[in-house]
Image (cartoon, rainbow over all chains, first blue to last red; front, side):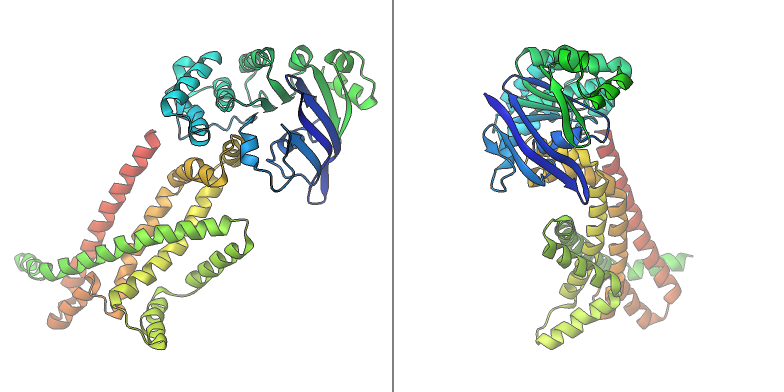
Length: 242
Length: 218
């Protein structure tokens, strides 16, 4: 089943065209990693998938909803798309449990008790059960990011978007976050991950997509893209980062 | 010196009546001003252009004219032209809340702008509508940021009430003027009034410090 279908997606900021026509289909349970140099449009593309960026042209269909249609109830669609940000973006005035419970209680009309149980269970799966009452400021970057993942999962999304989830972390904390993401992938979550972690992409991705200059330049299995890149730009990029 | 304290005792009943009215004016107009300020602020950050214009015009009119002119204009000008009568108290409240509302809207706007953009994005990505995200995520954080500036505005408004003595509002300053008109003891009288304002401002500052500390501890 197709979860995400993007056709001829274009996005401009003023006169600067960042995405120049992207086509992509993502199947249920697929893990797709987007790699490429900075400024290549990876993050912008990801943000178009839940309309944090308004698209300039083309269509984005998520779970059979055309989110580029102005009539689309984007809030409803977003409940099904979890997003994890580079800067975590936890709500600093709420404690960890409240961060996770907020959206399910407000949107899914879940009872506080039920939301609390869900939140505690999710915290346990990301290994932070004992941090429920802490405020984000008292957590390390890696812990904050794991809470952010739990917060997104609390809405029971069937797609997860990751926007460079480990780029703002100290090196020793990258592993703990990647581990949570790997578990998520093993559990069958549909994931689209913008990342600079080539090791993660190689190990976990079903498909690796190399973007450059607003286009998808090359895509394939990790073995194909990393082992035998066809395009010159992919080769240059991989030579620099590997 | 003993005669000074005697004098204080003599004028205190009248001055306290004035102070009571001053506090009433301050509290009432600030409650309204917070509401007006919040609405004007939301107008100014709205994506709907006409709302931006409304808040922009409001702000520039208030900023561009002196409080005393506004008071005379509303109390004498508008009421005269429209042939209606309002009390000087009502006129004072209108002037004060419009004034403080304009400045508070700018304070609120800067507070909202100071909240990291990622907060709104994270809230919206969870499916929260704009209004809910504003209410539950952005505003609670913005409030903490703006508390010192809001306190400043509250103090300014408290002190601005004294200007409304010019349209005959019987607040603290006006009461003092009446006393001086009777006995010509301007030095003592205005000193007492200054001290009374000062005490209220210091008290208000303390209250805000407590609120600020409470919020910071969370």
